[in-house]
Image (cartoon, rainbow, N blue to C red; front, top):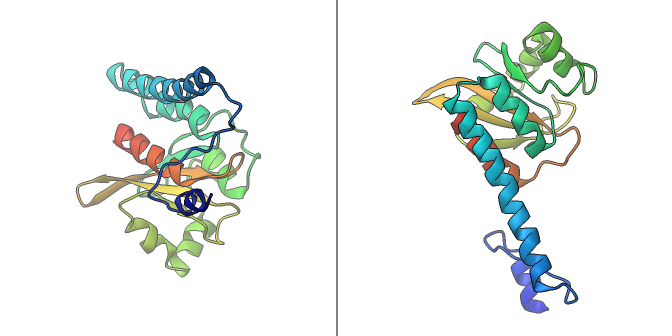
Length: 179
């Protein structure tokens, strides 16, 4: 058990602790289901690209994976797409602005500028979990980059499901598809 405790707290280790009473075929089927779920999402994303279904469709099909609302904005904070399944008043005033007004509200942009959060977020090349008190809940910020230029940002709000490190990898994949 000492080895398990050391490995469990090691972020570089993939570890699954299983109940001794589980049958091997049950474990195998569960793992297969996990892989199939993400493969299906990737297939849908690829199909969206091939059939030119657009960024809104990509956002819509990704809701089931993140189980949280998300939106994509351009560098001027205009909304390009957002999770249509989440009502405009389900989260906070910023979400309402994204959905109803079609852009980030000016109070949020000013708060980000005053706290240097905007320059910090713009400098991130990898998706990050943003826990800034400016926002009502944590969110993933994932910049969409074209060379050195930021052409947009994917934001995933922790509204229904806790955001984990694994979501960062999925956000990076989604940003690549959007790009």
